[in-house]
Length: 504
Image (tube, rainbow, N blue to C red):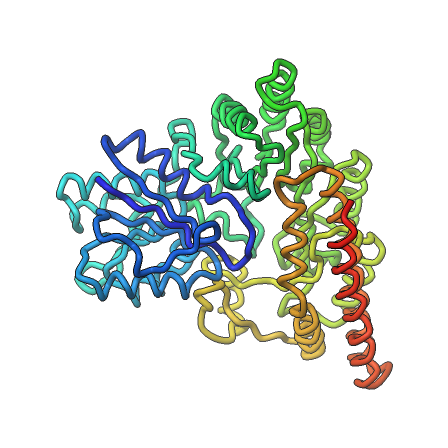
């Protein structure tokens, strides 16, 4: 049996290890006797669609945000050809846009969320000549068309104690090109109540599941042996409220570092919840992880306005957010933050309050973007609420998986549009430079250098946002704003050029 696993890439030109297809492969190799797997990763090896061979039994495609055009070309090529390849789509476009995809392409199968077991079962169906509805209806986490009708099978979470480790086909390439090596400690979220979040829909459940610690240590040793020094834990909720387990994992890493099983300089990045930092056990576990090599933490602050936090379903307050920032800075941990400044129910006063909070907590000193808008993704509480209130303003953008929104305050909407126009200038160049600090790096000093330079650019963006708000408040005329933006853009261009040319 011959299978092609194809990762189309993403709308960001960043070498982020395609763990999805590698995880599928790890399970196929163990479960399907004699399977032969070929791999294509678009970001590393761009593919001309018409060069795909005709002798694959199944083709599995990982379709992420911003890849719809490439996916459509692939499906069009195969559909118009005489080959009878079976196409299985996974990834975000399939999980959240399966209805739209199947409406256009009836002969594909969409995997919703976790796909390891589903893909194995589909391969068995093909191998045993059971390819059809009677077999498909019992395979979890898939959607397909049968007799012009959409069928969705039951959702089922993977048993992470039985799942196979990923087959890291691209590991050496990612390390060589200083991309991001990814590893999982868990899946899901112990909170699962943020209204805008799509994690529950992704997994089809509302609870947190850890991988076996022995499996994580095994993978870290493999990564270390292959030269990886800065793996990213992809978990939505690293601790899952189980602080004793997290501390034990940190201790096991420390032991392996001491005996040479894991490189002593290996460092880590993961995501935590606000309560993990202020919780006494959580704080102690973070300190233990700092000892084990924790470098950076992602944390979703989302807002500095209490009403907005409540709209988002966040169990936080602006003061608690500030406390968390100070605690983590005090531990010497680098910060990556999530901040959703704009939402369609926001008032202009709330926008001003947010701006003051960003300035007070100096969030522009962090290289993360703190000026973003909420995305109305399919199947979230937020999107359902927006539908009920008439805030949804059009059809789903399938490529980027969001619905367009109507803003109740025209002044807020004007600020957003003007800032997005500003930020789009040099956006790709800035993200490309920032990406050089996100994974494997030539040195940790270089990582810190890049992050500091990006934070300087964020401050310029913040200054432009302030100027736009002042213009909306009619403190000066449009020509003054244009001149300020022109002068600031010149600074931005020069700053980015200097940052690249003066790296230590």
